Length: 358
Image: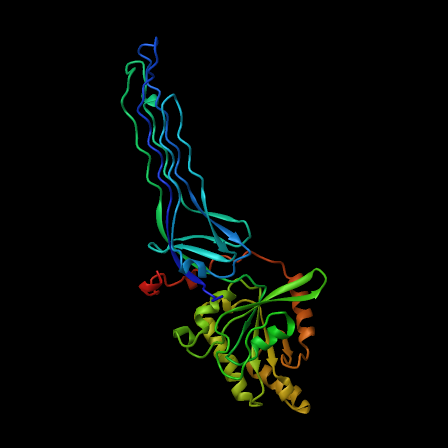
């Protein structure tokens, strides 16, 4: 299934039912009086989180949703039936905006969570409501109100504990294959990963975490170069970032330059994301002579002035990957989980999608 993380939908809540104009007419009961009932309320439209969905692809094929109208009122004091609410299933991790005003409407972060996105119209009043001591036979009613109509932008941000960050071919997909059951494509050319991948890393019975792999970044990503910028938003919900660096070149200056390039792009994209906890992971140590590894690692860390944790691994040979996973699990168990608010510094370009995608 194709991965789609942005979609536009058009929604229309139900109209309220009109009030009824009616009078009681029965044999032997003269001047029976008004008995027109109220209409029913129009149906609301809700979005509901569903763990069974992991892409917004369905909204590329169905973009219009409409709730039912409330029933009109009836005679004999009968109120019209209110319409049932309409629920639209979306993946957990969906952020919702009004596409016309850019207003943030809500975040779906739990399965079963609902978000009201369009309120149904209120019911109209029957003529029974307007009976007074001086107006015994009112012919006044009110119409039901129209339901809210909106155009929404849905934006999916994957829910993961750990995010992988790095240049193309740094070995991110190889690492996620090594520590989880995920099977992203791995090849020796750039941009093998075109869409984010999720993998569940199981440490022991009852202990696991979710890792997210996104397409590699290149220098200039913040200005739109490459693929990674579009998918960086999927790292905004993670609790820990792993900065994966390929050290197979053995050139310290080149390795440091690559690491700084990613760090600069991260800062340009979102200072809040750049401030998240980040570990340095030096990958492909199987290509480095054993006697050079320690010196190379220490030199890179020194030139980067890196203060956080550093790990040297080989994703392809699965060297030190189990230890890295265990340390990540320990970190996640130690650091309290906090709710991640919407980052206003990375608001989406609501009008940056071609009209054919609407």
